[in-house]
Image 1 (tube, helix red, strand yellow):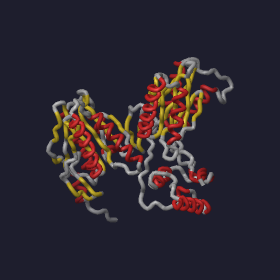
Image 2 (cartoon, chains in turn cyan, orange):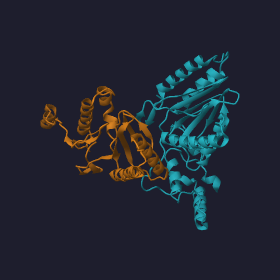
Image 3 (cartoon, one colour):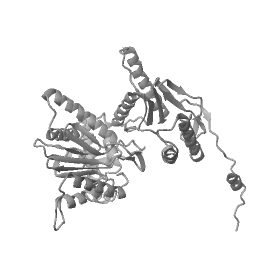
Length: 271
Length: 200
């Protein structure tokens, strides 16, 4: 029954068009009930599952009953009043590209709330160590919260180990920090960009709950679907008959400016 | 800041002081739930009081209070019981003006101009076109008054009484409330009121 209670993490994109496919995959649409689902479980004294035998049985019965009717746990009881949704989407897009002896990381500087712009010059890139940056798209308040946790842990590491953590270690730290909040996730879509122990660029991409992948380049955020295909074509050479990869940092910088300009044309959250 | 405390569209109290002085270089105001604003004021005042009691030569400045509020509001959001306020902290930090806004999620934003509520939708063009950071206090006051006038013209729930607080290196001044000068006897308004009904 634990399997039934676990939900897929939220997507970084806000599109409504996949609601239909959510139904097909027997998932409740991740639009409005995501926050409500966690809140409803938080209200049970802050823990997902109670220890008292009676409560556990109630939970199991309810879950199975609803599942047999074709409803997943999030649709259990109709919410009578509108509950506070703890999640919001603020941030635009971030890109990171790894190269030999360098790593490029970029993000737009717009923060939004619904159809309003909150800020035109807030950075989404934060240095964690001398050779590692975290870039994040998603909810800005959660990003600040996440940053503080990471910086505290890195300070502890420096105190205990006597040097800064490597990019690989920081990447691992982020992964388990995110998973630690598996049942009330940080609504952040992160990239770690830094230099690995050989001095080459290292880029790690994450989802909201800490799935970690080392990649040659990565994009996150609302403009992801607009930017990633261009990078696939220009850097990897997918779908190209004849491909010359970008030669140097200047070319890559121009490429990044171009992709952000393109994304900003069509994505309201990217500025 | 306006001086009303409303229940939905019922303007229950029209003479409410919504600025709270935390210390001589920090002013706190909030848009939204007034009881949450009062609670947060108690919280900030307590922090300031403890700092004074410690008497160790260290004081908190506006930036510290903005961070504190951001953490506090974020914590309550994590519990699913948020402070339903956009908190605004204004003050002087290291000799320079400081302004920050914190939303119910705990998102802290340091800005040079803060607009909350309906002002977010109606006032950005006024602020962008008539004000910049080099403007003096007099200009800033006029721009603020103009913004509130526009809000009173267009927001059905607004009241035409506002209060302005100024923080300088010399300290905090909260002015007496002023009534906005708005014009309702435009020819167009009168003519429309006397317009004959269209009949076929």
